[in-house]
Length: 95
Image 1 (cartoon, helix red, strand yellow):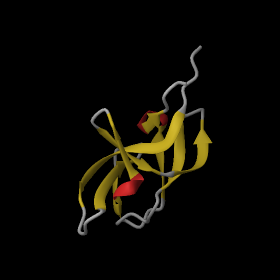
Image 2 (cartoon, one colour):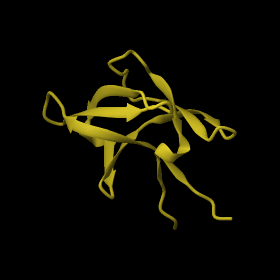
Image 3 (cartoon, helix red, strand yellow):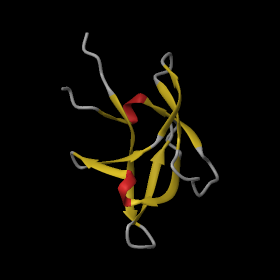
Image 4 (cartoon, one colour):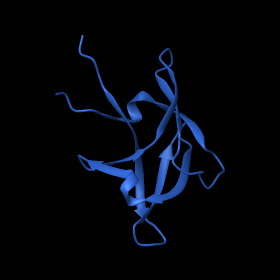
């Protein structure tokens, strides 16, 4: 069985921020509800036409294939942490 490596980055959508060097980012949780926040451009990576926000991993729930993540900044809603499915994470390249 092939092992999958995930990077601590979750898929997000982006838009221009208020200031130069800033992006408005939207991250969906496991239910599809989106959390919106503004971050520095250096916290967002792009690969294959998708964008990924760097996050902290707080807890892994293997049974439900999800992770509790901590956002780099508080979202507009006041949320700091949210559950996201493993499928939201950027997969690492195999060495």
